[in-house]
Length: 70
Image (cartoon, rainbow, N blue to C red):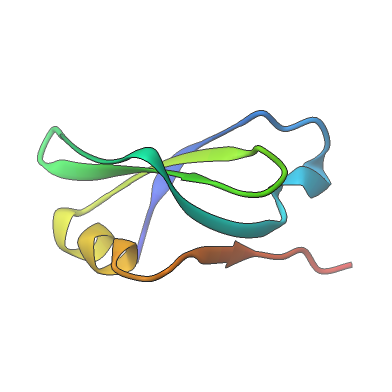
């Protein structure tokens, strides 16, 4: 699935690492697609947009995890 979006509340690049769950405004319909707002324990908020079907499927999961390789 392809998602496009922004990350907010980053103090360092490492803040993006973690497990994300749906925020309070988790799902909205914008221009034929879906927009989700996900937040991790570091306070980073991801606002992502994708095709309606793909994003609906991903939001049925309990969360999403982002990790970094060194």
